[in-house]
Amino acid sequence: MRSLVILLFTLFIGTAFAQNVPAAAKAKLKALYPKAESVKWDTEAPNYEANFEVNDVEMSVLLDAKGNLLETETGLEIKNLPAEVKASLSKAFFGYEIKEAAKIVKKGKTTYEAELKKGETKLDAIFSPNGKLIKKIEKQEKDEESEKAESGEKEENEENEHEK
Image (cartoon, rainbow, N blue to C red; front, side, top):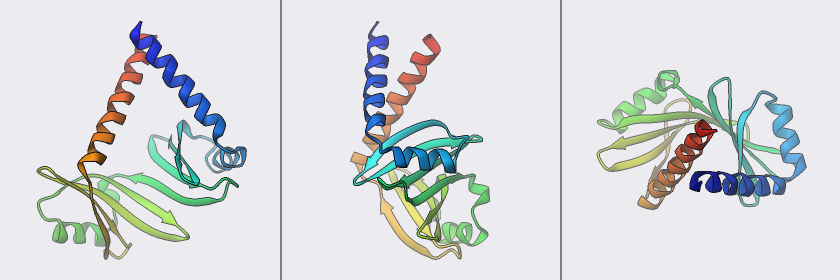
């Protein structure tokens, strides 16, 4: 019963928020990615982020209220990172494990992101296509707790879907 209540609450909140996403943003997402599955909307004030999958590839787009595309992030298999980025990663972050990778396109410029872990240290590294390190973002404990909470909610929702 508790699971059903949580599921209904989650669906209600998700539906209520989804209704707050401007129609122009929703229409742009549908036009750009008609095969998008499992779309989840978030706000990155004042903009709107849609997280979804297309052909089993995780993606996200950032749109403004008028439906203008601001940024696209596409998940990559680590082996598909450019050779220059992989070389820089192995030099600058020796001993780190690459957990995830993504290609980011913003304002016509492409960068690559690697989520890294070494022991308790977690960080994101942003690279240019030629392998130059642009930015290193250390993940704070708060970020990790948020990820765990989101992961727990996702697992609970998946469990609830299997119970149906």
